[in-house]
Length: 120
Image (tube, rainbow, N blue to C red; front, side, top):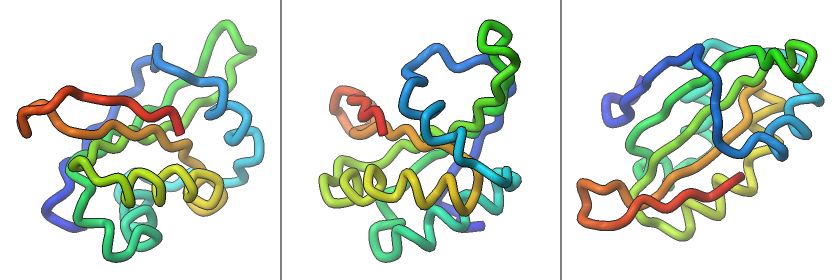
């Protein structure tokens, strides 16, 4: 695994946006472990993979939605519009290949900017 990407794991519910994630996750046929999923994500991103700073994998079942299993990866990147667009466009491919829905956050607060969310 690339050393530049910090990976976190959580089984706690995600209270952020889930509508698009659920729509895309209904098509999922597999769920890979986070370490394998991040490798695929970085491979798909190619040269823009260096923009990825951190990833949090969330895997939980929603009680109010008949136990629907959410597998979400939240990715933090440097402020990079091209990487942001590539991540947005790869959402369906990532679900097909890893079983994880993708959300992206940009401009880490440690870079002096405001954290901005992109609901992919």
